[in-house]
Amino acid sequence: MSFPTLAMSSPKKNRQRRTPPVKSPAAPPAAPAATPNDASLGFVRDKVEALKYGSLQLIVQEGRINQIEITEKVRVQPTPPPSPPPPKSA
Image (cartoon, rainbow, N blue to C red):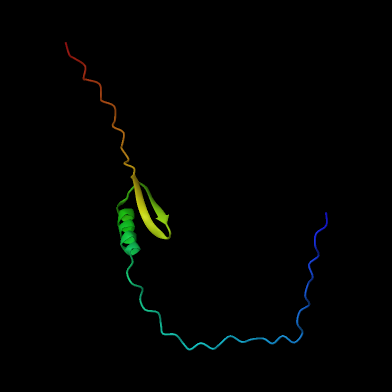
């Protein structure tokens, strides 16, 4: 089985470079408008600060926070065993 041969064209010798057009200086960008994610990020920050032990998981779809899952762990200190009753005196 043979494959067709592709002819390679030779580079043009008198190719002129094109310079990009000069752009006028742009105005500084305006402050971005508040997005719904800003509220979500504030909520996440508050929850992280309040969380002592645990985890926080963000579910993101198409660049937006869609769901927040928080798992909190509570550390329980073991209680000492009860002391034996005092001996009865006869």
